[in-house]
Image (cartoon, rainbow, N blue to C red; front, side, top):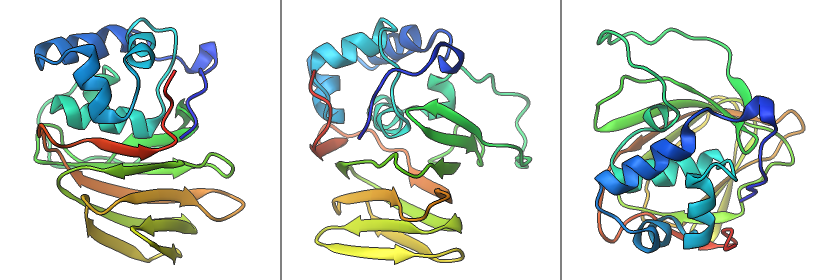
Length: 201
């Protein structure tokens, strides 16, 4: 997982403060919250103070750990409840190179996102957490590692799996990868584990 700071034009105002507020309201210490997402406490502290900007995979992990959504962490204001979510451009580079746009209603048991993974921005962290994930490739090719097996998915292919299976999502095409990503929002003391080369700063 690459977690280099974003440029000033890509920083999300107030993100650090919201991360800290969500952690405190979840009654988690820095140490406990960081361990659930596979980060060091020092690195999570840097995220909370705005000295670092998290990648989308880190935001997803934090959202699961705190029982909230990526949209809420980014400070998106929910409008009137509406079951219809209109399409639109995916903003590039808002979270460690991964672009995303909400594709489902907030406050539900599942979170749906449209995601763009640019080429060369690979997620090297193996994620493990309670729940399920459903992925649908809308453009490009995905390299999906599930346990010891590697699957190549082309446009129109999908995958549905238990999230306790160690998994890695990466682009395997020159133009990057576009997908619809749906996962359950679960908060569990044993959940949100990350294995591999997560940043431990």
